[in-house]
Length: 300
Image (cartoon, rainbow, N blue to C red; front, top):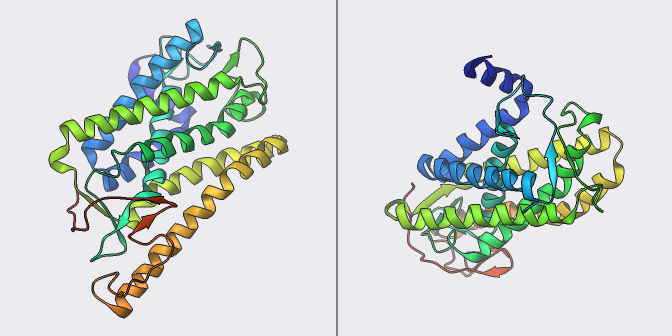
């Protein structure tokens, strides 16, 4: 089978992955800009592939595991790794990063339904740390479910050399995800600051920015639903328990921005003149202190 035919076969074989990927590319272009989205995609895929290539040989960083090569005639493989598997890390990193940023970015003083950043927030370690945490939280559901792929349409695509303690998944796998997430996003932050500083100012509407977190919860919901479909109720309950507090904070953040917008339109053209605002006001986003200019920022 030629490469083009194999690519079409891959898309038809894993259509939901390409839907997520397309969503990521569109949302990333609308929020981070096309250049940053391409850089994030390239960096994350390369690091994820190298991590998988290494783990399937020497067990670092995910632990000792292997892919079952029963689909070589149906999808693209790169060496002994399914291409689509490493590619999935790209949109998972993006949604985790944008969800983290959503809790830290400040509303624009002139346009409270817009979020703004001069680079001081998105280059920060607090954004990186929270994004990596969200990244690993996703895998708490994804990997145990994928390991049971023979019970749903994914199929049995991989296995571990020895059974892990968390629904068959070793704890080293989650450490590996933390390594991939942190190294990918840290390198992306460095590239953004080093080579794209001339376009570092962002001002993006909340309606656009929530596309990243929305995709995060679409992916999470898809995986949680499948855990219950195959009868893994405990896994599903654990996943809900871990993610529910973050989701509630996410909804609360949206409510607060809407609240600030209403105050701005009702009381003053300059938000904050009366010192009003919800718990996620300009002085503080999420429960952590923030910093940065109050000036108006241009889009990427």
